[in-house]
Image (cartoon, rainbow, N blue to C red):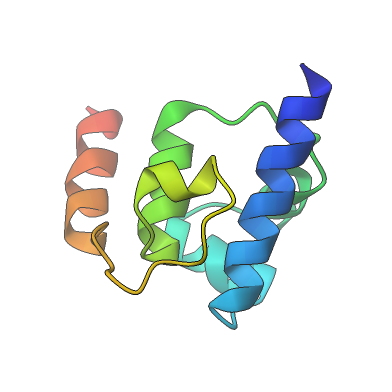
Length: 92
């Protein structure tokens, strides 16, 4: 199980760097803490589905790109608008 978390974290880091974002910038876009993003990238966090979606949206990547080794997307399908609605629904 730990290996899956490590691979997922490596992929998040790869996409973050391809987007020229710092951990802090990505965290701000996700409305998460910078240390949480660091833990995800190191494979120390078992990331919940809403946070996976938030990370994909913040990276402007289709969610499936977080789970495979495709090149970063040129077609940015995840949107911050969808993320805002999802995070608001989570809060209620």
